[in-house]
Image 1 (cartoon, rainbow, N blue to C red):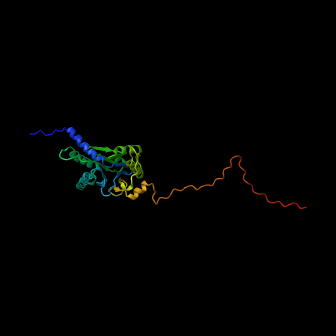
Image 2: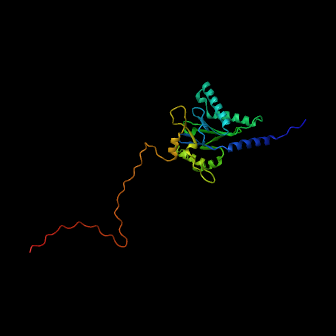
Image 3: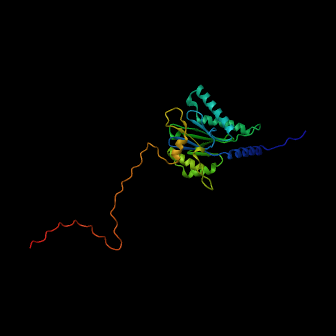
Length: 274
């Protein structure tokens, strides 16, 4: 009987982690940025059919990078779990923290089991609150680790470069337009040169707490993205008034004092009568 080939558990876990990281590094980055009215998701995604950012429940959104079929399975499982919990108990019992814990258990089990390959995915689970302090962003890695992010978070191939740009240019409490411009510029930033991302290659969505509907998730249309990123003001906004130009007197000629202004001519005087 031959002796089976032995691989230490440390080496096995290292090989599985390297395999997952290589697959994730091939994907384009996704940025999640907190702004004044909620959480903004921006990703570079040329595909119009496959979404990286989606809705899970009323106040909860899902974003992912890596293999599409794998994180799509996770998204569908999250939607089913949220629907079942909200139907069996109450809609308020569906929280981003609960979904993040469920995803962490699933990813950790898949990564540690030797029967199948690890998932080549990283995901965001975000929940918008009634106040900015109640917003939550959870980042989950391929091995089931959970990180509670604040202000902004990035995952994907160029995560380090995008995070460096956001660290320098992020402003807390910024408006949606400013946060979007900063996030798009960060995704196009690199060590060699900055790229201008085409609008048709962007996938942008928000969790907006100011919406009156229970569902706070919405996508930004290409027309609105073009208006924001091109710096064009909306058609209904009045143009700023400019001060009327005031004509100034001509400057005196150089080389001598200025001539005095001409006085009114004296009235004609009749000649004396001889």
